Image 1 (tube, rainbow, N blue to C red):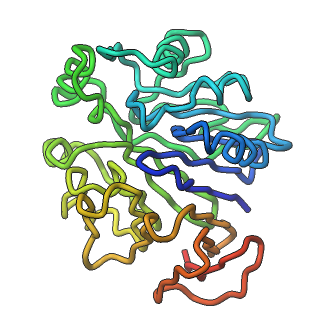
Image 2: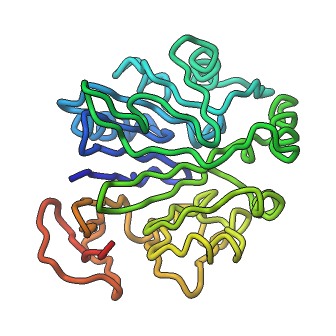
Image 3: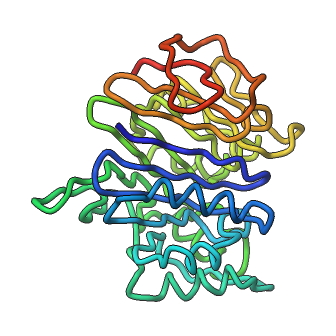
Length: 292
């Protein structure tokens, strides 16, 4: 069994995975002072008893790294996964300065399509792997090189974001896109064999500017698209797909077991009509289960 949390952090992203192996993964952070105690407590629960904790930074915008100083000081990040870059900011926050320090340190592991590492996607006699794989970037791709150049000049780093999947053996497949933008995905859509997934976290917090192009959606064929907390007027609601919208649901908790995902949310009034009732009760506000 694994537990995946998609945290309600307002206009930003933060996820964690308590793997079924001796691993915990955190993807991005958006930890405000008001939420600091709660979120650090949640991370402590997710990593309790785990020998390996990794932090994956999709890209260095403040809504994906706010509170990085607090998180690093709290857990001492030893495994910092990041696309290799030299992005700069006209105004540097303390969190961005910590990001720069980590990405240039011996704690950094640079991710790209097909990269391998213990215990990200390789097992050994000591511990099993996490089921994390990277499908983008292709570092030789000209569109990606241009995105790197833009970030290095202080422009938006959205399009240096990786495509990340998590797979549980005989269970769920999930995907994250960071803040990839629609126009960029259109340019590179034929460069990638897009993996089939059960649950897809919409890029750019679900904004229309990060709407996943139709050919990619058709290839990935998600059963659920999770839409983040961007302002409602900016959202793409992924018509014809089952969705969970965090503006209404709050944080979402995925209890992943063989062949099923039990789903819980913060809101006691939120519901959907496309899940099956398996009477799960690990958390409160169970909204149903997904067959995978």
